[in-house]
Image (cartoon, rainbow, N blue to C red):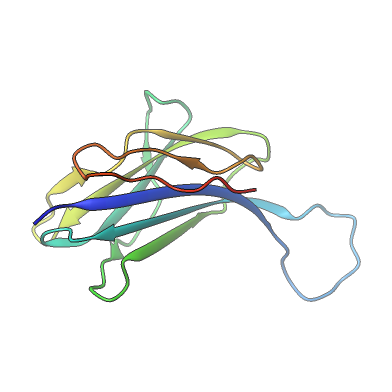
Length: 132
């Protein structure tokens, strides 16, 4: 089967809690969204973040983001970011036996900046739309 994946990185601001008057700025986040269809024997995904394209990369998600035949679209929210800082993200597909396959090159995302997208090697045409 052919593998296809699409990765979209976007930044957004989450407003936490109920309506409370405060001078505190909202917490910045980076949201990673991707689609993955026809991934042979993929059990789930692992997300990594690094300070540079060369790394080092640290695993972000403690638990594997499980695949779902009906889902196809996945998301991870990185809440441990600093506004205005550029981070690099990578995603691996993981088989049931624990074998990992890199789905994305290091993709830069500036917290609070525009969305980033890329063609993922070996997975066919992929990408994402630009967003706020």
